[in-house]
Length: 414
Image (cartoon, rainbow, N blue to C red; front, side):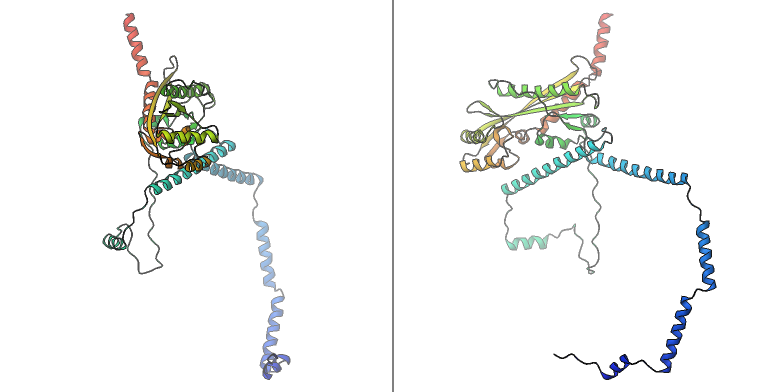
């Protein structure tokens, strides 16, 4: 298509200069203005000279002033770091009394994040499990309409005519106070050691709100003969764990003596065969263990706990020791198939658990019912643990008994 040609009037005006006297006058005036603006005047040169003089007369910082400014900025930076560390100690347990070593802070913070992530995963699994066990009830559409119309939500504000108006802001709730029992308040200022590597025991114990909770697993060998009675075996193993950690940490000059040490051991007992079942050592043993529990239907779970605390009087033997035992009866579902057992074993969820299953996770699909403490099957009965902590703490605080004993001895000598 041929391009459009411009009108003749526009073409002539663009190709030939204008000869109008008015336009020529304007052009001359503009040229004069350009020349006048490009030529420096006396007034402008005076202003430039005065500004240069002001720059020269402006006082400069001395070396001492520069040094003081640098010190002040460095102090602000360090104060900000200290403030950040203090804030971090409120969030991450175990940082108090550790100094401000970057390696320690980083390690404990990373460990804390990993523990919280694992707690979150276990909580999600528990929510999903409960949702599967308790599916939501279906209601008729008419019923739902009636309930919505008859019961307006009083917490929500009425709609506004102006769509651009921002919703009212809600003040966040303050952080709830810790579980304020006298024994826990006293232990919050001391080292509290859990002598177990089980993340489930640490998760259960964390609800007590102990900021100085440390996890120091025992390296004691669990070599007691399985011919012992189950309750004797599990009590002896838990006591051995607590004593091994106590002997190690009582001489810790860097952190100081522990306020309390809590150890636990859990076993599953096949009541039909009278055998003690601990953690499976292979996939084949894991499958056989779960099949045996299914076929026998009923078994028992024992958790023994041992708590130790140094005596205030330092009298021999120097510590207080108390133990507790919890028993729970578990019934397996007899309709669990071999295929289901194999699928569960391959998830590896129960590979590190006594009996080969975890009630708090996917292993709950194997269980029909329990009689007793639920968290005892998980690995730490919290109610019994709290009673044991109170008992050993009271026994360790023996100043009053020491004074009474001395006064009685003095009375006998007289």
